[in-house]
Image (cartoon, rainbow, N blue to C red; front, side, top):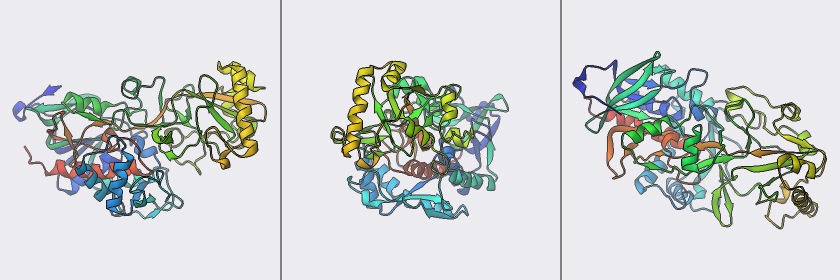
Length: 484
């Protein structure tokens, strides 16, 4: 890690606040710092076509906080064994209730997304405080919120440098003095007279970090392939403690040859089952919960597990695309940025070899390396449950029970598809990055997926809500530091 003092005379550029990343948290931080009177430089790793991180390709919703007290209870209950400190809970509960007002101040209309009101964890304390998901205009996705926030940055004429990654912090006696970065293809040193905000996203596109912290191999990211944990490594080198590093959002998905990110799989017709390497169902394919956490054996656990096999039949193939179209799923990197449109009957993807086909269940098992007799038994047992409308083994909702009975049959291995990660540098209620002893690293702040509030479960719109809140807090507190 580089070290330098003010008198070194080697700065290439000087501003009050440097923000790393132009996703939702970085944009909110830049706006807050600028509106507090600071000069701001945003350094973004990607170019115009690919910037914005997971914020750009998310559902672009923020949750409606109906009651601050209930919200605080809900956050603690969702956190399981790892609740945030009370001061963080208090600020999160208070400020998420102000997100809609802040978004409307960007001169965009907002509304509550119809049908989004039921909480994903209704039995938990405080769930009554969850009021659904807010959106820009009258619908979700398609980068609408990110575009509105990014436009707010541009309207303020904040200096945004694209294709300009931050590579390290420059320290002066334990305090952040600036950053090392790439500007115009050249290594440069930028002085931050007041502070630096890290908002560079998660680590889902870094396989080594995924193995180290999530314990899964062969993973693929669902969102931005630029989310490689850069900011986390930078903060660690400065002495930061880490939190929530084992928490993430797993997804049912498919890894396609030649594609950097995975496709999430959510067919409307649910004639499918999930099996493990023994060719047996291991649980309810559609359990209670959401956003990568499911109620299994009385506890919320990460779901789906890595490396399972998805098996379905011809009726499911013909009923609609496995990867949902934009009118049902107006998000994901491959749809929004890459522009991929999955074929209506999955025939194009089948021809490309993205999943396996066989005339019989036993034949499919052989092609997938599974025990044919056992997979046949598994499918017969599942179809019997469909026939009586009752899944006695795993309690799957009868409304979702559709048989896997029409040949030919299909299957694929669902790798660990990582929607987003939650861990990163530990921060306090002021968004200050903390050392293991609890002291703050002077003039260093963090927000967004890089350092989310969530130790375990999170409901719809909560990742974005958290990014907006602590992005604003980070930017405002960085701007409030005494210049030097």
